[in-house]
Structures are given as structure tokens and as C-alpha cells.
Amino acid sequence: MTSVAAGVAASHPATARTGVRILQAGGSAADAAVGAVLACCVAETVYTGLGGGGFATYFEADTGEVTCLDFFVSVPGLDGDRKAEPMVSVDVFFGGLPQTYSIGGASVAVPGVPAGLGEVHRRWGRLPWAEVVAPAAGLARTGVLLPAAHARTLESCAPALAYGAGAELYQPGGRLLQGDELLFHPGLATAMDALGEQGPDVFYTGEYADVLVGAVRDAGGSLGPADLASYRVVSTDVDRAMLAGHRVYARHDLNRTIDTIAALPDDLSRPKRAPAVATALRNRGTQRLGDTTNVSVVDADGNACVITTTLGLGAGVWLPGLGINLNSMLGEGELLTEELVPGRRMASYMCPLVVIAPDGGLAVAAGSAGASRIRTALVDTLLGLLVDDLTVPEAIARPRYHVVEETVHAEAGCPPEELAALTDAGWQVVEWPELNHYFGGVTAVGRAGAAGDPRRGGVGILL
Image (tube, rainbow, N blue to C red):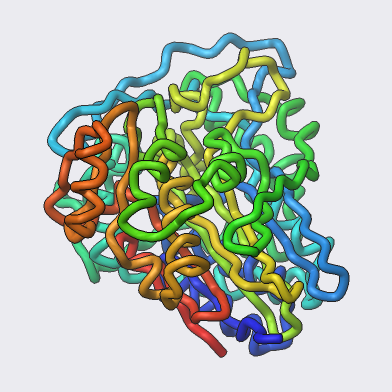
């Protein structure tokens, strides 16, 4: 049986290095993934943070069991003592066109990242919790360099990220941070130290719970103590689909990624497959940005842990003295698919997954950023790995296309014969001039290597 080498894939060099150091110290895939996600909360704050939510998928090599954990945000209002004020509208420009988002205190849902990481560690971690948190606390003390790809995201999302207290962090002196400049959040090291010493409860029932409630309510939100105290991480059903003789496992996400894989045609040869794949990927939704990031880890025992987290765009509500921006999920219109009942989990496109080979061993662990393009990015990457026999770096870096209603948005470099097949089949094709972070941000570790997405400054490291 061919095995997957131990490794880490992430969207920032500091994040990937953190995961690798934890593996080298004897940590499990869960330890390394948790430590790396905490590093994301320092190094990738244009995408995620402790004030966000996420999902984890874990593969246990000894048993073959796949578990999906939901620690996404939930709807506030259980306290019932406060009505939210109107949200703040901001226009984010993408592809030259404005997209309106809503931020501010009323956009803040109950965060799940601290609780979720704590639960992943409790179930599958080997190292002490404090040792897993320590590397991120160290990064928070020094700050990290902002990759050029992250700087491009910041430029697109500046109306939300450089709002309020975020202005002095992301736009000091009125000038946005550029690639390779220092990103530093005063107070974040204090928060990480407390997290390491007191555990995730510090944000839910501990000393920072009142700080969180106060910050949200001062900004016009309704989140209260009961919302935090009642928050729980939950296991969610695991879906499965077959692709090229491999079993793909993941949660049932808003985009129905597993259902899409199951609907792919039997004949996946190129360029013939292009129209059928486009049909499977058709998305009758809007083209939203989505600030999200993913960490994929495999350890020496063959266990895999994939964690995807997000802030939305970020609410622009910062915990005073702690350097933490809160999520803006209640302002993400495309996620508001159900009635906003207090305590209810919100829907999400995030879909961390694992793929099991015909021989029963792990083939790849992968996840992606990109809101409604997460499915697009993952499906194309899996086709590259399992059908087209590409390496992980090749599969992630190659041009993708994303389908919205009757239009195929194609990155520069998509094969002309595939674009012609799409046009002949009646699709409208819009060609983009470059690879663009709009098309997602995959990170993956597999039998054919490890890589992060060049669209997001990604890095893959094998031990």
C-alpha cells in the first residue's frame, strides 16, 4: 500500500511551519492541525481568527473511521434581552464590481473556533494543550509578514477589514499594508496566552466572555452570556461519494459537494467531460468573496486532520486589548438560508474532506477557502489527482472554472479545447486574465505530495 507522507499544507508559511514543528515534537495530526489553525488566527487574519467558526474532518488510520465536527457559528439571541441595531453596509469591490456586505455588531454570530479547536484536541490530541497553543502565542508576540496574495485580498476587503479599530492595523497612516510588511495585532498574544493557560472556556464562561459580550453589544449586536455559555461543538453526518474508485468523505455542506461528486459523469476524459462537469457544478447563486482558510495535516501514523475556518469578512468589532476581530456571518446574505432562530447553527459552504484509496489507505486530505467556489476548487483538484494523475502541486495550481447559472468563469490558461466544448454545449464563457483568489484556496496533503494554493500564498511541507 502506498502511504501518504506526514506533512502540512496551509495558506501561510508561518502556519505550515507551526504544524510541522508540532508533528516533529511528536504531535498527532490533530495537534498539528489545531496548532496550525491557531497560527492562522495570527498570520491569516484577513481570512480567519478566534472570533470565527469552522469545521473539522478527521481520519483515524487504525480504524478507518471518518468524523466531521461542526464548530461553525450559531445565531445569537438566547438571552432575549436585547434587539440588534441595524448592520453597517460596506461595498467590497471584486472584479471591478461592488458587492454589498453587512458588518458591525449586529452581524456577529456566536464564535466557534476556540471551542472547536479544543474539541479536536480533546478527541485526538497527544501533546498537552498548552504546548499546542504556544507556537501561535509566540507568533502573536512578534507579528508575521503579510504574503503578497493576502495583501491582494486585503485590498479587495479593505472596506470591512480596515473598518473601525481595524484601520490602524491594516491601514496604518491611511496606507494599506503591502506584501512582505509586518502584520501585528497588539493584545493577541495576551489572548493566546490565556487560551493556552485556561482553555477555550475562557471565551465562553471565563474572563473574556464578558469582554466579548460587551464589545458586541456596544457595537449594536445582541449576543449575550447565554449564547456563549450554551455553545457546543457537535458531530455531524458524514457523506460519501465514489470518484475514480476512491471514496470521498465530507460533511453535507451548503453546496452539496459530495452530491456533486456523485453526479459527475462516468466518462471523465478531457476535454469531453467539461460540459458535464459544468452541469454538475452549476451554482444558482451570487458571486460572493468569502474570507476563509484551510489547514490539511497528515501525521506519521497516517491519521489526517483537515480544518476550515472563517470570519466572513470580519465584523470590524474588535475585543479591546485582545487583538481579536469577530465574525460577520449574520451579514453574509447567501448563508441566511433558514430562519434565524437563536441557538441554531448557520449554514456554510466549507467542506474539509478526506479521500480513501481502493486499497483502503488514505489518498489525500484536502480543504479549500472560497465560499461558493469551495466546491469548484475541491472537485477540480480531486479530478486532477484521481483522474488526471497530477501531483498535488500541479492539481491545485492548474486553472479552474466556476459555474454561475449559465456562465462559466474560466481562469487564464484553461485548455482551449475544453472552453470550446463548453461553448458548443451552450455555455457562456467568461475568461479571466489571471489566476485569482476568487477561485478558491485549496490546501492538500496526499500520496502525490503536499501543496497550498498559489492564489492564497499557500505552502505545502512534507516531513
